[in-house]
Length: 442
Image (cartoon, rainbow, N blue to C red; front, side):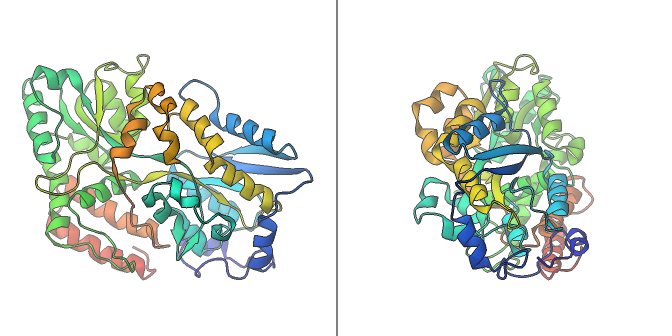
């Protein structure tokens, strides 16, 4: 595959085309797909690039899934290649390997924001012709949207992350306050608890100059019904809705509901402050429930509740969450394409999804398993509560998504820190996004 590793890395996976049209390693795409459709009957060894999957009960979840797959396919052996846990560093590391046309990893676990970038640069095999027509019926619609680029599927769902509002049940009860349904109500409740001296921080979230902030920004924009890109992938950010979303982020820090240090927070920072008893409310992903309930690490275990995120006062949506999570991609240079596709499909299927449900501190991607009695028996309210959420996709339909994300988190961080106004930040972000979509560096 004639790709410039230097170009790819320097541009953050800039677009070089619409996808795999001529195949890899000199093979036409049709030949690759024919190979990918056949599960080998002779021995094959796969390498799976996978980061540590949060465990609920102690076992290494990836090992459980590998063993289950090998029982069904004894001729195929799967070995792990330990990936990095942070999205950006993980993307850089796997890109380095794939851009050099390496045949390994055969399958790699990647963020749901990757398909457009990786598909447009021929770093992932298009899988839509290898799936049954009803494949996506079992998964959230937002998950399908983020897995596709220009009508081609480049990732198969594995597990999802969804954002929730965590709150101190004891403090709300003490002050006679309900779980807030709007951001305006959350600010009032937080200030009441803070003034009483019961918690130094009202609302903890993620405001660092990183993808963590982009997730928050995307959610606040969706709360205000303000899109970032339109259906054709052109910049749409702007107007009163977008300014309302940015103004809310500024209000949190300006009123002291959120500490000024939130501008440096990623998920772990905000979670540590909350489980340390320093906050009333926390926006974080579903996996934060397990840490908040773990008495060995959480000072507030047993006093934490979870609910959908609030919305703005009025008739706008409630319970908005980014469609986060991780999916499996197939390396088009794999020497065992049929085995690789079989493994990626297995991870998306019922048996692997039930393993995740019972053992992992993540939300399985397959909707149907979340409605089973086993989901309620786990005792994790995020598993049963995820079906109440309004999942939205980040603006990932562009292969220049890393630059689009940078435009959002850079300008939002300036608003949070009071270095610019919401209106100025929206205008600047819009201009930056237009520049990003043109393939120019920010």
